[in-house]
Image (cartoon, rainbow, N blue to C red):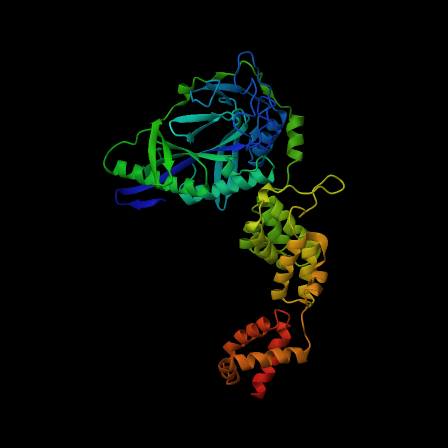
Length: 498
């Protein structure tokens, strides 16, 4: 929300700190598993429990993933960065400090474009996660699960360039896409793989100075980010309209009550007593290493959007759906190429394919593709209907062998049998081949004429708008097997005869 309020004219100013869990097998500084969902405190060791004498060792894969993310965001990856200790106390932070980066981060100075807006990226740095306090396990006590302690995180900090909740939502969705395409994270917000802290302030329109900011912590969905920003902005506007000052503090979002509430005064950097981590040497990355990471980068979402519009003439709305995840985009492209009909491929993937996936047990973003013979994942191998089967179904429709209505039934059966049968064999087995025989079509039309005599008479009297209704009734009578083009022609002939 931004604009005129009863209290005056204020502008929202927002900067976001996004924490992304990296897709490493092990933690940032020890060999413990970073997998989600293990029994409490199972994935722990002396390092992540902070036992005396335990020393951290940097996870090389985490560094590579962090560099990929930074390069994808147009940042400068620095040859030398420094790990630091960030001191604060939480019951689920065993060391009493977090290993992070401060004045010399991994990367700085990027940009993420969303539409016509360019959101500047201040910094990208590596750090470790804290554990988790659980307050609903026991009636009178909190439980601590340290499985998450030490899991590698990437923190992506934007400049205060965002001006509305909706713009913040678009920025986060675009950032999520980049993380998926680079393989940096699964960005599953339900499992905490992407969490957002929002810095928000209000100022009079035209004022160049920033207002006092508050930080809304640990937002775990895009809708919650948007709602929390709107709520906190309204609160700040009300405070300013009364002639009072906004206090710099940390806020918590109460989704059930649709409101923010203060948690504590907002810390400044000196409160954390940062100093270089003595147990870790500077992180030194050579130019050759950075160039190799840059050379391994995949096609990013913006480039893929432009290519789909150019090469496949797909609508902007369909492109937004198709490019949302790399797995879906690769499946669409494989079907488009195999069928030779990108428009039909886009219609099927954004329609029946996505509808089926929404009811599937596993989500598209978490799919584990079956490897092909050369070790690479075959496009679409994580989908129940293989690429060649869907391409064949599209060809059957184009050839007039099956109708669109029948094709949906065939697709549902292909989902059930997977790659065990061809689309043509399923159509034959279910008796769904399109019927173009005039005698059979006239028999179905005659039956519709008897069952819907009033509509039939009005059509014969010249009400052409009923033609579509009658075609639909004939298709239903035929179980979707009637050739709709020939049905249209026979209805026209019948209307002429009267």
